[in-house]
Amino acid sequence: MLLKRKDSSIIWQKEGGWRLRVETACTEPAEVTVPQRAFIEHPGAVVLVPLRQTASGPEILMLRQYRVALDETILELPAGTRGWDEDWLACAQRELREETGFRADSFTLLGEVWPTPGLSDELMKIYLATGLQPAPLPQDVDEEIEVEPVLLADLTRMAGNGRIRDAKSVIGISWAASRRRSGAGYE
Figure 1 (spheres, rainbow, N blue to C red):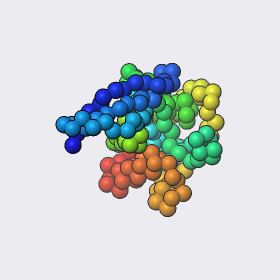
Figure 2 (cartoon, rainbow, N blue to C red):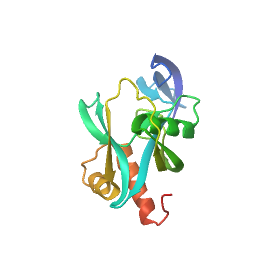
Figure 3 (tube, rainbow, N blue to C red):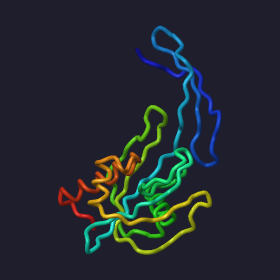
């Protein structure tokens, strides 16, 4: 049984950002209408793993950030939504500077994920950022962010034991640790 879109409309849109679409679908070939459903059309986002080498080992610049939906401050990797036509790497460079106050000499794409495929078409591209140097940009006015460097070994344990519950962060930390174990290097 295949579903085909019968009716579709955007009922809400964030200026320059994602859209809420409601649609009705029907089955083929029987043409049975299925209940109306909604999903988010999203321009995509970047996730950054800003890594630097220290005497104690590799560390990642994490963020402590208040999240309204959770009514909680969480530890997470820097990330941000891209513009609909914005270049992915340009978005990564901008978000790194806005959220951490650093720029990177090198960006390596670690991979891509769909964080919520049952709710949204959002694609997240996860980048390893190395060769960090101070170069701040103003943060968004609605963000309360504190940069917190944490050793990769500690983050790997925290991601593995559930102390970090943000999915994009668990994945980015895991992929960075895997890269290190494989001997691929960072810089």
